Image (cartoon, rainbow, N blue to C red; front, side, top):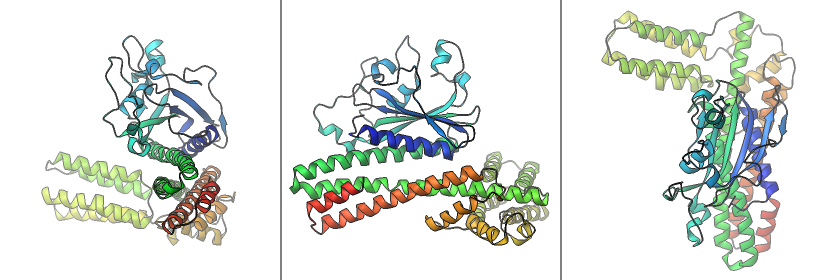
Length: 453
């Protein structure tokens, strides 16, 4: 990897990224990260591989006994697209700088086993980790040379980015699709990994510059500060993953209440009725009708707090129904039934925290239940470490009949630790900026940088 990072730091960053993905995406079971070396050789080398156990509690770390990507790795000329040789997904990720999703092994044109042995391989997603060339100042070096394809054409020259690593995540059969929620999460995490690796690289370079050229301190610290601020963007993703996990817990809590009360899913029933009524209506506008059905079905896959859920319904569903009625008028009775069903849909969003649904559930103490409901259905738009601590504490209670109770508890503990690390990083960054702008001493800045690693 032409980003300068110590091996131990690189391995630690890769391990943490694989842990985050495997613990947060329940349909994954294995993760691998490859580093991509400096052009033009672009040596692809496996850094680490992690496999999570069936209970999703422990991850084992081991490199395959036989693999062309094990150290010292495989050069670009050995895995690029070339006549007479099987196509590799690694080549696609590096040359095209795009992801590759094997959602159906039988049709994966870049599967080595399928091309060589006629055997289906596994279900996986590969995501390149990109860093801007401008951040690495690559083209300022006269010795920089771009790689070439098998025909001698230069590749990647017109791109703003270079590939510094590739993430490969294995999924259980038929649980991964192109542009699915899982692939979008992995893409966002790949960006944060790229930013993290870049920040380590720039941190090391900045230290050397400050020790050698004190008069360039301001410029060096500004580069470092900008890079570290980019790393804090990871905090937003961590908060997103926390909200996703809380949404997952909210769904399970409502399922527990429905089973306790022996009731159906009001949200599902309302969407089914809306889709059925739309299908029964005449008047054309198939594109508009299809779009409305897609939006309503998409809402089934979302788990939002009630207030945000109602806003989503108003913005996405109600607005489209109004557009449809404007272009394809219906009689008053049909319109009234639609609006009534939408009201029922909004009402169903409050099922898990209204008094009628929860009053007779007595399998956990009343005060614990009250706090649990408050934490699940709050609409905070900022990271609250104390609230997350209380949620983790409640999840430690075995009386809480949530299927993923222990897994969710461990996931939230890890996300909280990541959030605290990013918060400390931002505090250190702000200190460095203030110190530089106020003309502080080099040693004080250097000590702070050393303490932040």
